[in-house]
Length: 128
Image: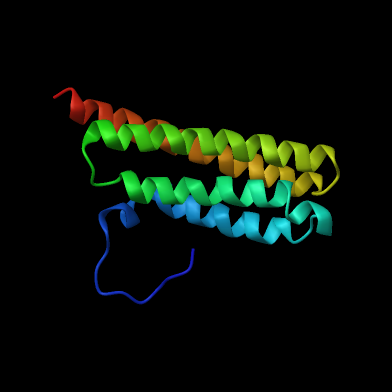
């Protein structure tokens, strides 16, 4: 993860889920470059939007009411699944190699687990 100059943090920037989602987005941007030119604007664009959606929805939902945060987190989890499906299609079409596919799946599995943990945390706060 890159370090950026800043004097203060927004609350969501300290979340491991957010940090890892940015790392995954960087990975996807680098991955899409390998796609055939015609697929960069089709499947590549879809994968890019889904990956970007993860961090954007974490940021947007953090600091809202818990029910609203949980709603944004459901969108995050859907975007994770969309990234998995997109990367699977890219692998099956030979747009990415096996190592990149494994790396994508590993990152998405980690993001999914972090999202599930954050969901449990929010639900505990809601039910206090």
